[in-house]
Amino acid sequence: MALVFALCCSMPVSWTIEPEGGFVVLLPTDPATFEEWRTAMLAVLAAPVSKPRLKMLIDRRNSEPVSVEFVNQMTDFFATHQRALAGSRRAIVVSDDAGFGMARMTELKSALENPDSLAHVFRSYPEAVQWLAGG
Image (cartoon, rainbow, N blue to C red; front, side, top):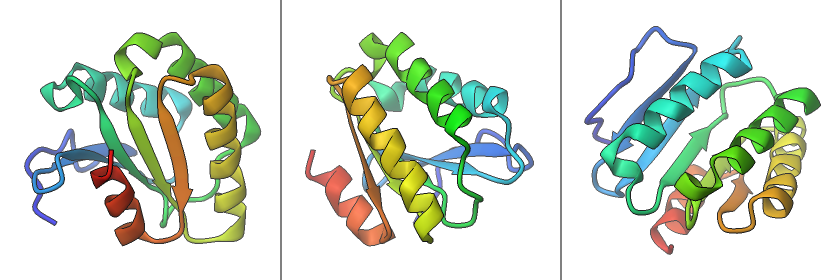
């Protein structure tokens, strides 16, 4: 994967643009707070790559599962930014059952609160990339 842009390599939540696939890769590093996640997401939404529709791969394979409170804060963020996220696709890649469960909760809550965008959880990075390419 070729990296074109990195917000900052020492930040708890960094992001890059995957040029071949035309999507953002969001990479949280533990411990990351919601405010750090929010700051990264606001930068992503301001970037040209998010226009007209954001495609994002959230790589949580090396991160601890988020808490229920974190999921609630993320879905509130998505609902607040519905206009910017309309038509977006977010693939969440995890490596374990606990991460899958919390990502699935995020997927379901996002579908209820922001039905104009899609989120889907994966255990396979290549499958997530394929899903992003399909939309």
